[in-house]
Length: 601
Image (cartoon, rainbow, N blue to C red; front, side, top):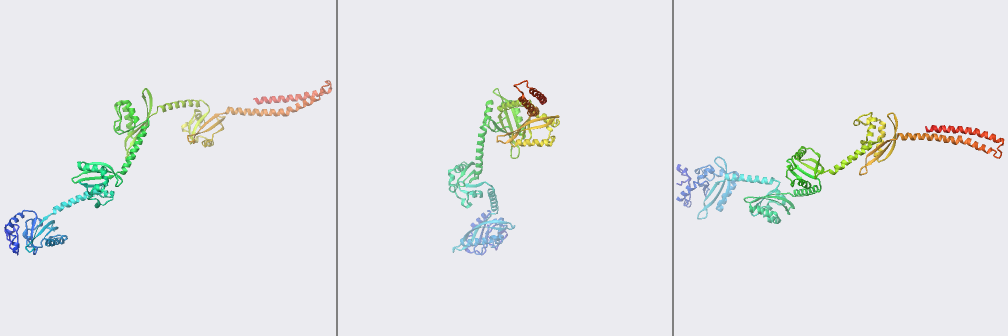
């Protein structure tokens, strides 16, 4: 390859990279020997821009063909000009470039990256480095260097920076704590949540060894689990208490090419809740197992959610199988009829119904009555997610109820076999129980109106107010008896009515027992006796006033008889007087007898 001076270009010279040496000194020309031609051939094939500037005026004396690709200008357009590139420098980078040239002149070596607009006015990033070739006197003869187009590299870097920034934004936006460790367990990254948790800044943490920063970690799972993740290259998950922040944390660590990515979050409240739930579950299980009743629940697939031990034992006694949560309760061991019945109960409850079923079962030749309560289990969204069942043996209760019912029938037969009226009212003055005589009397008072249709308007207002007063007295805890007189079916009747308050366990009056007894016959008899007594009193009056006079007269006349001389004529006169008085007395006695007989009528 031939080397031309810049002021003697020809067509051949323009076809290839050239050295142009205008006004070079002999010392400068000594460097331009035939070997340079070989170097020129080599440099023409590489992509980096190789250049040489004259140290005296900084004019370009050599540049290879790569300049056209990088700057958009051919070599012959640039050789011999010192400032053509300076005109294309980005304004913000010109001072930086001037400083780099001064450093190159002063120190003999320099490096710079700047931006430049090429011939197409495209902004390119150029990285350049150069050094000075000095003469024998130590002064720079030429400045040589290489410039590379790093635009694509910077674009990739910007993308990577953007991606890294995006990743960091992700880590900064998550609520979990995140740290990155290298293979020596040194911090390489920590998001702000983690920094806030430990109360440190990023500068205080990055580059520090985790075991030196938090030495307590080596004594806990933190060390063994993180070391396992790093040594075995496997993810690990664990929970541990952190003394440095006095909190429980859940940790997930994943091995990476450069170390570990560690996510952790505060689970102190969750653990406290779990502990409470665990204790509650333990207490609940203790409660449901401390009963002879059967308690269990199933999901929509008839699989057991919870089950107490008595029910497990009961099923085992029949099937020899031990039921556990997750087992299907619809086993064929109970027979198709039982399966069909229970499936119907479950489906009914799964439809949202709450209900009670009482079944009669024969166990070891003994009849048992069992009450089963079915209640749907609802999710937070209101959907039925399962059924809870509570079953208890009510055989003894059923026997007692049957006995009570039988006794009640007997008692009702007794109270219905009397003409006395018996009824019970509650604290609202409503009749809650009564015998037949009560209903018969109400029918008479309401003209045989149906009892279910009777209202307070069917009774005379005065009567209603009077009876409400009686009821209120009894509800105020007063036991008393009254006599009522009224006309029933045209006959005057007398009734003795007892009011007795009934108390609950707290001694509060909750109802009143009322009993009305017909005392008409007794009352009429007493009235008759009273009338007889009045007659007898009148007779007694007659005896004391009318009879006493004649008797006194007879007694007086008897004193006048001459007992010593019976023939005394005076005796005849006295006897005649006695006869007359005796006649009067006889008439009085007849009147008393007549009145006495009248009093007996």
